[in-house]
Length: 236
Image (cartoon, rainbow, N blue to C red; front, side, top):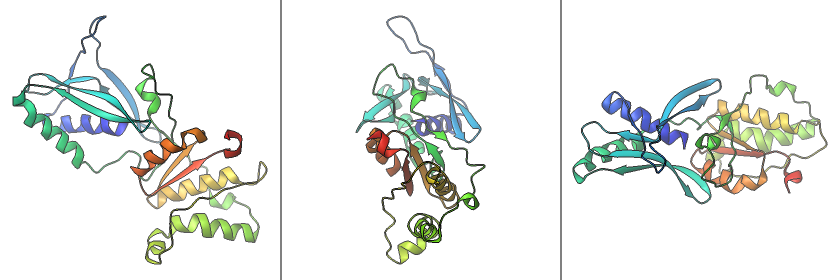
């Protein structure tokens, strides 16, 4: 959702030099457009308008909203314009589709999917960036055998992605980190997140196993990706 909203905002600025905001009529009176704060990186934000917009030289309006598909929210852009304005709207849509930049691809983020409710603020669906400034592989203390397993099954595919592909070594895998508190499970996952960012992978963390089906679909749009779920046994 935020990537779509940001793409629209930047496209309108590129094509027209500004964004023409409009009120949305309603039963209880007009609703002004919102200005959303979107995280574009750790400690980095952008202010993005959300709601109804006018297109210079075109009658009618375009409107941002959320469309639900496979139980996850997607950015949706709708237009209410005369036939003569279709070319301008198509041009906006084409420019948005050509954009290759992504807020989340190659980053370490936390995601959460609130229940599908109309009352849920759109910002509740926005991922949060992970702070990995204090994470270091040097802090991991394992036996030689455990270190070998972690390196071989988890870290090497991240570090040597193209080599694994050339050698026909599958990158798709499931890894279960188990043991009592304090053995380094969370730190291992955090080190993997740091490596992911360094090597162009997207690291996606969720704390709710019930969200995994939706997280999988989100990850498909930001491949290659690693999904991490904490306390799987407690959730089950």
